[in-house]
Length: 249
Ligand SMILES: [Zn+2]
Ligand SMILES: [Zn+2]
Image 1 (cartoon, protein in one colour):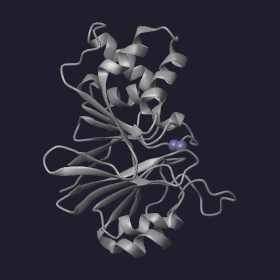
Image 2 (tube, helix red, strand yellow):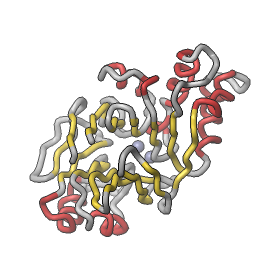
Image 3 (cartoon, helix red, strand yellow):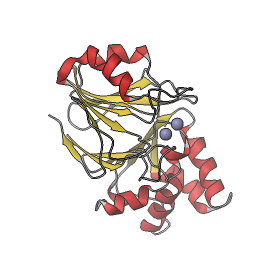
């Protein structure tokens, strides 16, 4: 399994490309407003995507969808019929959220709104869901601590945790049983600072003081959803850079 960082910024950021990453070239995780730019910058054709994951319906995670949808419609010459199914995974209300956003982005009666039903196979998930990936891998989902329903996930294979994504979230002790499985790599929201008066995101202190004691040193933590690039790296905790790739398994 290969993961590539397309962008690493959170909603609050200095203007760095917004948080999204790609698993095995065809599985897009998050669709921020600049997702078409990020895909193009990394040589990824949007019409090659087979699966899209949206952790929640905040703008920095799904406002790129109208651009993907309209360009898919044009790519398939207005027929809205991709030659392969595109699975889109997200919280409950996924279809309605996409339709509402598309109407706002273009116009209520625009054909791309109804095209959504033809382009995608919707998979609405919560923390009890399990989705089959290629081969023997599965996705399982974890509830994040965020003001709107938000799920992170793990990629599991034969009971082992290959990868965990802790999306937009503050620290929650509910992560402890997940991390106890010692995922090889954890992507984690690091938009917060240890001295924030109001905590809305994790910071490196959460990882150092609460997560690493659970996993030990066999897990690598990669900070995504950042406010700025070029922040310092610690043992077992690295702030992602755009374009980096991680090989797992
Ligand atoms: Zn966010
Ligand atoms: Zn959010």
